[in-house]
Image (cartoon, rainbow, N blue to C red):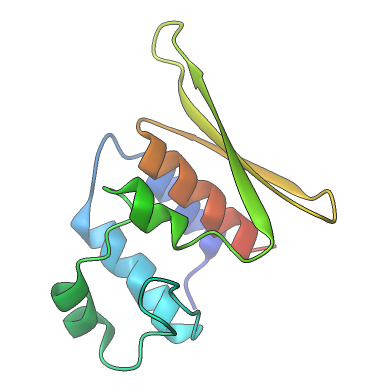
Length: 120
């Protein structure tokens, strides 16, 4: 299984969308049978074929990144404009757990935070 903390760190280190990382995320979703809300369930066939057909790229799209947020968690975003501070996303749940991530774009920050939340 993919180490989600390592995968989140890879996402945070990106400067923009990265197809190979998106494919690793889709492979994780497939391996863990995690439902994708816009698809109506988990990926049910070869994940790379599914990726080519559906183009889910959470490193490029905020909408796709939202598909990774675990049920019961909600996001909040903070943008810091001092120098190259980046964009922070935090996810919280009703049990008062919190995870956060900082990245170059909102989609990358939300993706990294969602992966961390799933790794708890």
